[in-house]
Image (tube, rainbow, N blue to C red; front, side, top):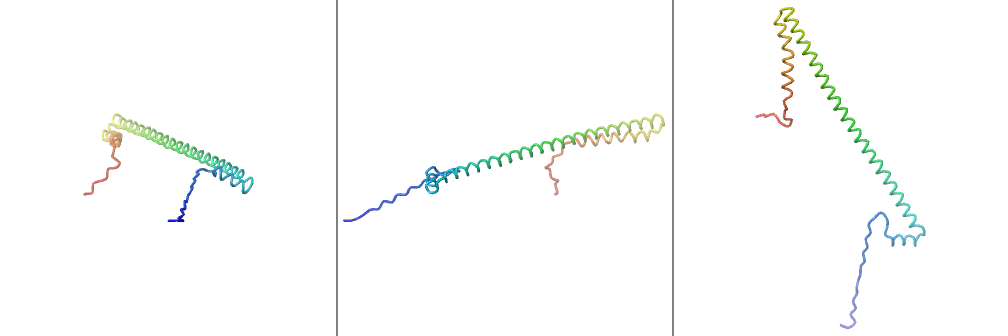
Length: 145
């Protein structure tokens, strides 16, 4: 085979990752338009500054939101404790008043039926309080067979 020619093809692929072009590409921009590399660098710096400001604002907003959530949870817990204390104080007052009226009705007025009725009020309240303290499974569903 005389006169045969061969062709060699070579392909070069380059890759670059990052916010800025590769240095060779920047140099090419600068050759085409003098000062272009400087402008590209300034653009990247401004973008980075803007990104930092936005991330700081987002971080501060997240911190403020978490602080508000913690403050709300504290208010809810404080309200629950205050409500429990008020309920206990009122329950004590009702029980003490019932015992006082029972003693008055039984001893002074000699009416033991009324005294028994006044005594039944705190006893029923205590029974309900004890029954309410039993833990009930929350996920248990009623059986409908």
